[in-house]
Structure formats: structure tokens, C-alpha cells
Length: 200
Ligand SMILES: Cc1cc2nc3c(=O)[nH]c(=O)nc-3n(C[C@H](O)[C@H](O)[C@H](O)COP(=O)(O)O)c2cc1C
Image (cartoon, rainbow, N blue to C red):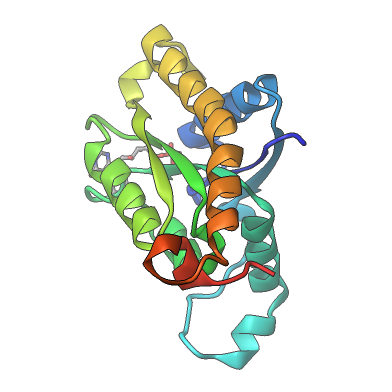
């Protein structure tokens, strides 16, 4: 079975730099044998999450993002760096999800103005880990200087983004299989997986 990878573009800007970066990661994941789906948050009119609102839970957009995240074995999550963190659109997406990330694997990529991306990448990784997901200990950031005009041209950045795409396709199915097998083991021997119970 091909690894199922969801590539998420957390920018709300049309034709922003992040679209190229996540597109490159998606191509690399496909080259690694993955079935890839892409989610552009600017195309999804997700409401601002209101915890416990039953109408929101039934909204088409919410149902769609939850189904996509459930489907995925792993994620490439892309964020623009906004004020030293992830975008609000991406954090709002996260807030609709929790169990969908448990035992899954994610690689993170970012775009920045001039920064290194460390802050926004760390924010995304922390958020994913707090949902009991596992993250790739490597990442890629494309600052404005990595682009010539509208084109991503820095070969070092391109190389890093492609490595993220390949690694997510490589490790995501292994991790999901191990985690799902441990869900039904009782007690501490089941580790964090058995806290989540049967995926059903
Ligand atoms: C609200 C806002 C906050 C930003 N904060 C930062 C920042 O903290 N560090 C940085 O390097 N760039 C920052 N930028 C620049 C963006 O990260 C940069 O323009 C990036 O290319 C945006 O992604 P996009 O091209 O996909 O829209 C900020 C931009 C906006 C609009």
C-alpha cells in the first residue's frame, strides 16, 4: 500500500511563496511512492473554531478537514512565519483536530521574510507533538532570499524541502502501523497508543 500523505499549505495568500515550497515537497513524496493529497487552507472557509459547537462539527468544511486528516498516514505541514509563529489559519486548522494526529508522522516546511523559520517550525512541531504525533527532526525554510522573482531557486533550500517530502513518505506508514498495533495492548505496555484506544 502506498503511504498516504496529506500536504497542507497554511498560507491564506494566493500565489504566496509557500505554495511552491509545499508543491515541491508533494512532488518529492510522490516520487517516493506516496499517494498525496493537498490541502490549501486559503481554499477552505474553515470557521474560527468554537469548542463544543455542534453546528460547527457538522459544517462541510470541518467534516472535510477531519476526514482528510484521518485518511493520512503522515503530513507535510507548511506554514508562513507570522510574528515568529505559525499562521492563524494553520493554528485554526490544528484546533479542529487531535486524535487524527495521534501516532502519525509530520515534516514541517516554512516560508519567511528574512528569518530562519525556526520559530514557526518549532511552533508547528510542538503543536503536532501535543496531539501525540511524531515529527521529523529535520525541516526546511525558504526565506525571500531563496527566491529569484517568483521562483524558488536556492538549491540548498530545494534539497532540504525534497528530503522532507521523501522522509515523510518513508517513515509515516511504519509509525502508523506500529502505533495502531499498540492501541489495543492493555496498560503501560501499550504506551501512548493504548491511551487512544482502537482507531476503529
Ligand atoms: C502578519 C505577518 C507576520 C510576519 N512575520 C514574520 C516573521 O516573524 N518573520 C519573518 O521572517 N517573516 C515574517 N513575515 C513575512 C512572511 O513570513 C513572508 O512574507 C512569507 O513569504 C509569507 O508566506 P507566503 O509567501 O506563502 O504568503 C510576516 C508576514 C506577515 C503578513
